[in-house]
Image 1 (cartoon, rainbow, N blue to C red):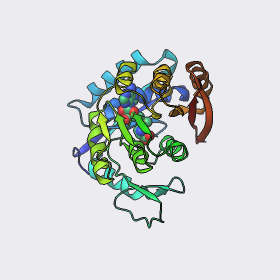
Image 2: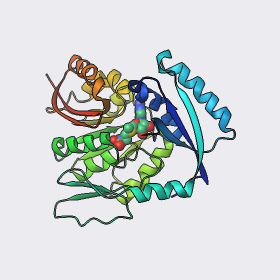
Image 3: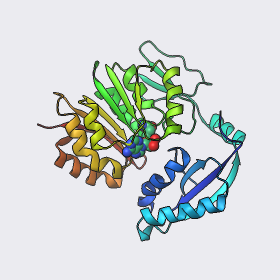
Image 4: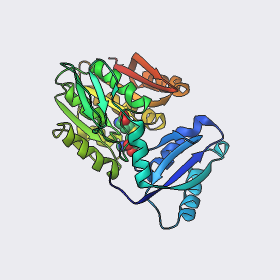
Length: 291
Ligand SMILES: C[S@@+](CC[C@H](N)C(=O)[O-])C[C@H]1O[C@@H](n2cnc3c(N)ncnc32)[C@H](O)[C@@H]1O
């Protein structure tokens, strides 16, 4: 495990739990994109700033700007030694069989793979996407079913690149990963190397309609980001799938309570819901393009 000697562990609580994803969106970039739901709110491990109180004040101001007043965000922080943190991760984690074919495991654990099984090694670092989150697992389950050999795939908000790696190992012809967080991408590149994913191209950028248009046409798009990011991008996703006879979009990072709004916008953009995968409070879906 690399990183500083200690982390500033920052927790944001909000009055309305439905606003937690928005709080995560504000906190995420400070913690390299990685946000856990714990301690009654959202938590990020932040590289120690020069002044923790000043950092917390600046974060409070940012939250006040980005969240509705009803959120009433509360920010608290504590220090945690890096060694303990790494150990905590290690002690709690093991291999996870996500589908018949797909297994995700930390490198220090063993898994005896059956013929045809795909084992992805991901060490928990600062990037989101270890298989420990319900949204990642939802995407992997839908992807295992939806991917066709030779597909051109883009993974939007790739984090650790776990979904991009799975797509490549399931037989995609070309995979592009888009992620704006440089720290996540350092981790993602290590993961590509560890999993034979060197052919996957990582684009370090904010996904927007212009970038999507530049990247060309795809058969399958993966987007495990927050619903607030996904909804405005749905028309651009639809356009990027327009050249495929069989365009598929897998979305996640959506709370069950947010799913009606996502479905409404997806239908308006030219999709229909093919399959839903819900785990805990999270909702993921495979959407198909309609003519
Ligand atoms: C919930 S994580 C998903 C990581 C991984 N794909 C998975 O399924 O586990 C979302 C990631 O999207 C990135 N992200 C959020 N909005 C983005 C945008 N507009 N463009 C590129 N990356 C974005 C975040 O930095 C974060 O790493």
